[in-house]
Image (cartoon, rainbow over all chains, first blue to last red; front, top):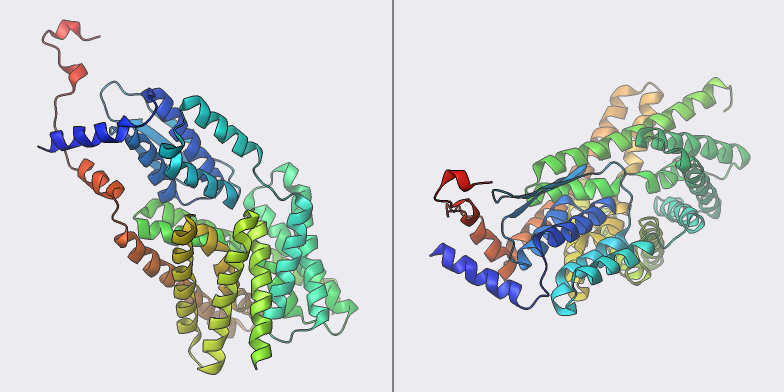
Length: 273
Length: 173
């Protein structure tokens, strides 16, 4: 009886779509998964999207396993092939997540075949990361400044100093970005730069508050994305991904703290106030 | 009084928009996530200052509000939830407590530093709890045909695979 229902569902699902072979479906699903995971989606979203895509073409024997560092798309049937993709570098691009999500819900209505979807993904990928380095640095400064104002004792001096600190730290990160440092050293450098610049600001102007400037400038580098995604993964039942995301968030926070502490210590050793 | 909360809202709004740009969010969602972030922050400091709620409960309630509004916005505009939630949650992250705890430990006030750090960790747990509860509830409510057919497929089946059914073992390639 189950078998009958399954085949009915499969026929209904696959009826209104342009025909596609299993290899093509696997290829497209893999592409969508890669884009989603590389732009910082939760692993449960990646798995859901890929499974929904495969099943809407009637391939119920394809299974996905995804962690923050690997995607495995396997075929359960006896002579099936499987595909593996290893993710080493992840960035954040909310726009890409939104658009691939739209595609995964709407490709039935858009009536696209293999070539069309592939071309759509290529076009969309060419427009990824809409904000350049300059805009990102200014946004980092603005975020730091606004957060410094939220913490109490709001003054224009704190605003300006926090803007400067956040801006300089992010600019430094973008400058060393070409050398591909490991995330630990990236965050260490950010913490160190924040410590030095904030101390200098306090040395120059007596109206600045060290605490507010430092905390404001730290905010853009705190791993809020990893933390939120990890907690959501726990709730979706992906315990492995949840653990590794939370560990990532803890490691990043620790590396910023170490950089900042190092800067404060160096400042004291130099004999400065 | 009113001015204080208006100022807080404006700065939280701007901070959330800036974080949206940092995460490369497209322009059409920036003001929406900014709205959620400002609302969450105003509720947080309002609970703390007007009703003198403990920082754990204030964090928890503000996070629940942010997550709820994000889920509603996600259903209105048909976008993923995380797109609204991630920038909006950032102002609540207890960076102040972490920094102060670390600073006290550096100055050799270890026990007081530990206390402050533990408070920051508890606030982070409150945020996690808020996100978990709301996303769990909405996950349970999501019973589309998608999920139903998926559950049916997860039942075990032992059908004979058609391409393995050969009468003569020599035929199998």
